[in-house]
Every structure is written in C-alpha cells, then in structure tokens.
Length: 235
Image (cartoon, rainbow, N blue to C red; front, side, top):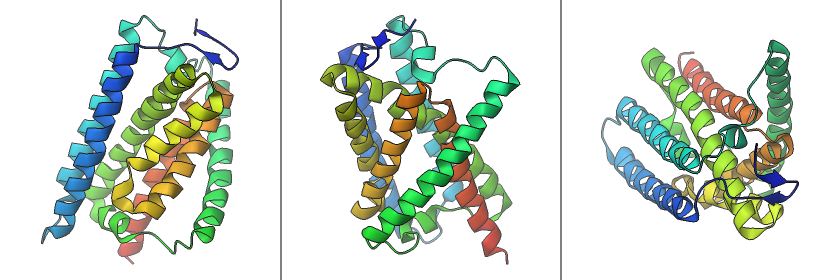
C-alpha cells in the first residue's frame, strides 16, 4: 500500500536518493545544454546519435529512480499508479489523456500568447526529425520521454517534494520548476512554458494518483509534433 493519506505524503525513497536524482537531473540539463551548443555548431547535425543518446539517458535516470524506490521497499504502484486490470481501464486513461492534451494545448497557446512567443523556437526545429529513420527514432524517443519523464518528475520527484515540504502545492510547483529548468537550452521563455506544461501534468498525476494518463499524453504530444513536422517537410 502507498504511504499517504490525502495530502500527507510520505517518502517513497530515502532523502539521499532524492539528492542523487536531483544531481543526475542537473548533470542531464548541463549535458543537454552543452550537446545542443555542439549540435548547432555542427556542419551536419547528427540527430540519430543525439536521439539514441537521449533515449539512453532517459532510461538511465528512470532505472536509478526505480532502484531507489525498490530499495525502500515501496510498491511501484505508488509511483506509477495502479495497473490496468481491464481494457475498460486502459480506454478510460486514454480518454483522460486525450481530454487533458486538448485542454493543455489550449492553455499553452494562451500562455505563449501572453509571453509573446511566436511559433516553434529554432532549437526545437533543429531537433525535429527529417525522413523515415529519424522519425522512427523520434517516436522511440517520444515514448521513452513519456514513460521516463512522467515517472521521474511526476511519479517520483513530485511525491518526494510534497513529502519533504508537507505541502502539495509547493511540491507540484517545485517539481514543475525543475522540469522547466531542464529545458533552458530552448531559451528562458520556452523553459517557462515547459515548466507550466509540467505543472499541468503534475496536477493530472496528483488528482488521478497515477502517471499513466500523463505518460500517454506526453508520448503522444512529442511523437505527434515530430512526425507531423517530418511529413510537412516532404511536401
């Protein structure tokens, strides 16, 4: 059973483990910034290599998170949410993910309008796939991001921060801020937008007591944006 009663979350792994995860996330963000600088400076950017490296890092941090939770003898259902026991439960979460994605996109469009962000940044455009091979790897990266990042940030880190601070609102905001800071390589405005996006996912996970709908919406959003861009380039 998960160790919580309402807003009174208890730690699902040790504090030292949480600091280790935060250090890994900091190194990940720093490495990502350095990689993007080299990526933009390259005459022929190697997207395939970057995608494969990113997939590996996603699953490495995911493994560290799961190892800490298992070591603390906390059921993984406390991080991921209860398993689907029927096709009806799966379809329910797909419907929740779809409704959430539509609402989140509407909210982000309004937020980007307030911040006067016009279109997709050049950094993001440079990352998006060209051709069938890159598109296939992009989908693999999107699925990895959906599973790993929702587990890391919403299933694990958000719960830990709520437990440490004793306040759900503080834990949600801190986790979203850390998520946004990890995307500073896209510029500070986009980092704020992504932080708000992460907060939306955090609220969804907190209310549903599960990251599964968020995984679906996250993976779909990333995959859809990349594949759509690749198809538009062929026209």
